[in-house]
Image (cartoon, rainbow, N blue to C red; front, side, top):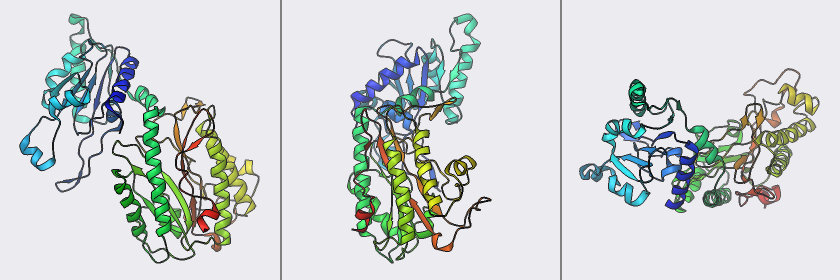
Length: 439
């Protein structure tokens, strides 16, 4: 796991970027699954990134306008032995100070009493409205008190803004210790894919494959899956977020697996592989797979400093469209098909996304009219696909889909790090060449 020194360095950078403004960053809360049962706790990624504190309902204050030793304040649930018997140990205020580098810790119940004073003197308040209604009420009340008394005190935070622009820019560029964790997440995820592929055979259930994947995640010390594992045989692969995973795998079909693990410190893998259930591609499956693989490999090569995610997508898109025209699934020039969007019944998503503490990680793709250029330390997925079914209407002027193509869904996805040299494919241990998949 990332050590507490690294969290401390992040806080120092964040405090400097606040430029005298105070930030209020709440933790996540428990979420009810049904009745009095709750989902497993998942910490808010922004809160985790700055604190490493993995308990619900805490509130962190970052106060650059105050003296050293008073700039990182944490409100936490207090120690309560009777509650801890049921729900597990808490760190409490002393534990927060001793183990997490907190300057000052208070019981959560004191937040309303102390918040006004802690925010006094800040040039502004960084708080994400609309996400934490209980905390939002307290923040707005504290801000209003400052504004009401500003003529007498001469002090007030005259602006309320979201901290996302600062935090998400920081999170977009991964630090060396983060990259080691992402390599670990990709390694476990890739190994799980290979174990699952060797396990697959006709007449087993998709759910059995899911069990093999997720069992390996847990065996390797991960929290579990980073998202709902997609194990989609045959036509199910044409449903992009298919998670029912309850159908029997048939000989002659392809199996698409989109799955990755989440580590104990929340860094994620996200890998997709598609291969034949019986170990051999049909001619139509092979033709489409070769197109997707060529698009994916070319797009990966574009993940270099100075390029951008939009360019990575367009590289893949051009090769996909050229291949589909050659196979007769599309007609027209490559340029016209792309300009008109008449490929979207066969390829309806972008080619990738940022990856990190969130699977679809934070960070802008564009700044106004300009795409964000790739820099060292950014990690993104590259995942072109082709999905041939009759779910979407064929655009006017494009050929009707013949039955022998229908039910083929293919996606190939890798996790790719931007370096100073060539792209680093973090998930390369999951095999994807036709020779390897048919071996």
